[in-house]
Length: 423
Image 1: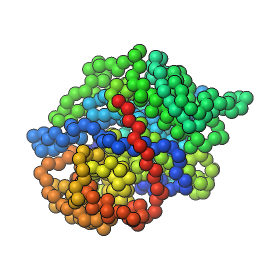
Image 2: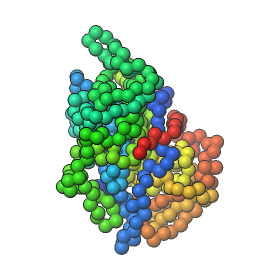
Image 3: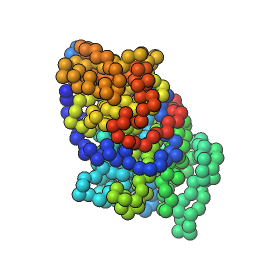
Image 4: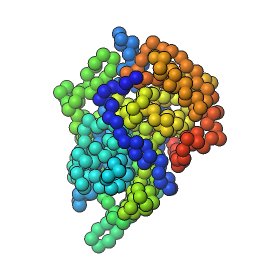
């Protein structure tokens, strides 16, 4: 009942608690996929050892800094299996880092000021329970080069874009529909407005990435196919990316295929023990974080708890049902390391597939918060996964009318919008 060793980075339980705190959900326009976030069928291939290998889905961290050295926007770029296409995930710069009891609360952006890119990477990895294979902090000029000078980005924003100049706050782009150049996109990604809450800016950041995804890879920029840096190699039945990818490689390769854009919802943390300085600080919804990362970058997921690792398969297009399953498992201290939206209609029964009898005994104890579970012993095993839960309509019916989390604890609600997906 052990996960892939490289994944087993035990994170403090504070990461879980952080996602449950806060007051008001930001109007960040969370995009939740109506279609599968893990489109590849590579994970259904079985090798001679009867072990299903999770396809390689590496992730990179991209921070854009302003002229004063502050992080202005923060993104995770996760490649799809095979190395083309993927997901761009917008992360609030003001998200609360996971800290020990001896550390003062801090934002992700503060980690960059204190300890540079390495400190920021450590904090984001701890918050998302993911391991990045590349990282970069880029200036506005460097971001233009990443995007490519010939790009035309169509965006629609519901509010004006402002920036802080020595003379005061100035509007640089009114609300509405616009066609922007790469330089304009980079300028907004690298702009900060001191004194204004990040919640005002997050919908704009999301709209920019949706526009970038729609524009695809510009004609003047191409992802190299040098075998030493960016090609894929096959190891057994799993697709593994060669190791020398830069963040620019990640972004370029993502934009050559089907691209999804996601922005983590967040809750403002009021002044108190978790925010003594009354900073512009936010708590992420931990169940959402687990679901997203386990969907778009499962091979990069780290296990949070010293417990079994679980895969969730869901045929429900309503992602709130999948999130509820993730939430309930995480509250029990169970690691959700892989989430897939599978085709077809959901069955009536919720099935638990397992290989070992001790695992069966463990998952059968979940019936108090999952409802009736049908155990099924299988010979195949997913690498790094101890049990696979296939959600049925009886789970949907079981949770109907219950408080989120089944009454184990209290958490805030999550708004689910239509998926932002571009090919």
